[in-house]
Amino acid sequence: MRRFVLIAIPFTWLVVLFLVPFLMAFKISLTQTATAIPPYTPTFDAASGWQGLKDYLGQLSFDNYEFLTTDDLYWKAYLSSLWIAARSTAITLLVGFPIAYGMARAPRHIQPTLVLLVILPFWTSFLIRIYAWMGLLANEGLINHFLMWTGLISEPIVMLNTPFAVYLGITYAYLPLMVLPLYSTLERLDASLIEAAQDLGCSRVKAFWLVTVPLARHGIVAGCFLVFIPAIGEFVIATLLGGSSTLMIGKVLFEEFFANRDWPVAASVAVLLLLILIVPIMAFQRVQTRLQEQEARA
Image (cartoon, rainbow, N blue to C red; front, top):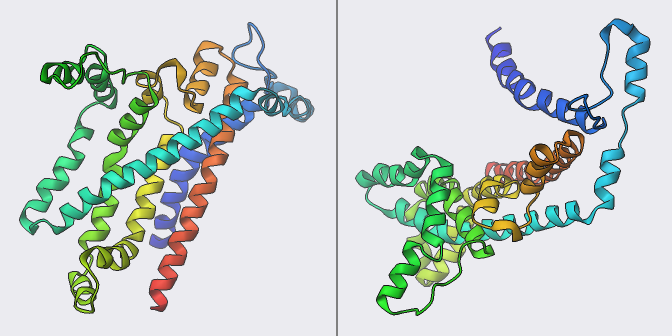
């Protein structure tokens, strides 16, 4: 009985919080928008019985998905989101790895404090933190004022509403998601392996590349997926820091839902986005399983 409860709880969680919302969005994506019948038709009348259900199902269609293939906006938004998310993930890894490595090599008694400093930004609202970056990156912002005060520049540098601001915002916002799994992996790394590699003739850089990086692959893979998956659907950062010139699927989704009020098309965009995200999630699971099998055989 206890085993059944332990298995049932996570499955119930997945059904209630993932499968049911997904089926609702998928069902909406198969319907059509109708004026004065918000938000979509057809609607199902339970009083009509089995025949009513058959008629209702017969009116569902994949027209919204066909529409997405005819408009370049959606495919460009998907590709742009993938590109921005991939580059942001790479930048976050380059920034996060030295931080995690330094934390793992720090004295034991100060490591909890360093972990606290990494997660400290999460105590502040995500929206407020992004608004703060708007103030810093604006032409009249603190950064431009400081650079002009030091004489390094004579005119403000345009940083806000540029791709640079988007990459900066995503890297800043999701850096803890990269640092924490990396730190968890590097903190357990046996330092004697690096010493052995150096004793055998490896330089510090070569020992780092041949020993530390391969042994940290669990944290690298986990951190990359933790950053890539939310970054691909990012809306707030793309809107507030990237401006109107930044095309991401999260912005398109918002416009369809709240500006155009076209729920069926918006649901189609959301369902396709979820299917795109399932691919890296499944790849992540396969990589994790393969790594665990390799370690078990070693």
